[in-house]
Length: 263
Image (cartoon, rainbow, N blue to C red; front, top):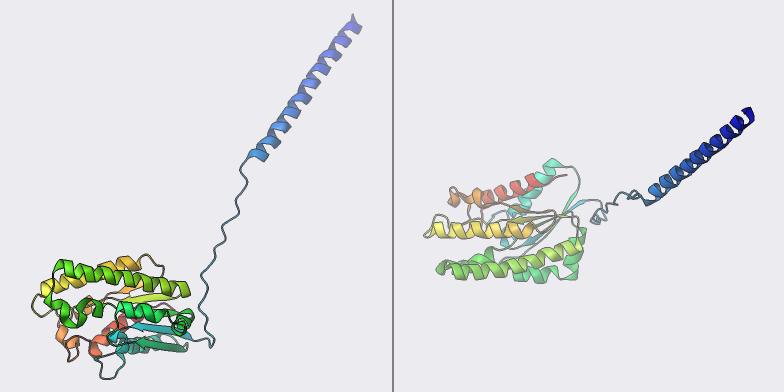
């Protein structure tokens, strides 16, 4: 009787031992299959920073493009907003600053498109840390011609053509320099105290809004507002031609642009 009991106990023990081994095997199989099927950790994305502008002499390089505002027409000292901006920048930093000014009196957006396609200008674009651009006043006002036809359809046609040219300009600048900050100088209304001032004010404000929309499609591109600087007592900040800024007007623009620059 005892022999049978021992044999029965051994059979039962063996059975449960096999069950345990089988269970262990199944557990291990499930574990490793589950690990291999689990999503693998994805390496963190590599952030590639835009190439830095090349400056052979180690200076801070500023490129100025655009029309007579960039040239400084109307300022007896000939400094324009670029010159007064430079004065403020020198106060903020001891780093050497190199300025290349390619402002052209009467320049339109179409003419600026042609300019930025020249190889020597493209080299200047590549080397710049900051690019400032004033363009659009000659497109819109056309030497005062637009004042004789303020019809919405006429103004919209001028605006649409300008925006196409502006987009080409910004594409060219970004193609040759992905890192520089671009500052676009907004328009002011030199005719704010003349006849149809409500109409011209609306036109200029709408123009600036559309320019801001266009600039928003490009990184590190800032529109610098100037309308408010000339809104009150405009005669005090205009030159004798009552269109370009005088020294005081240019200083206001230059100070505002310099205040936006970070070092």
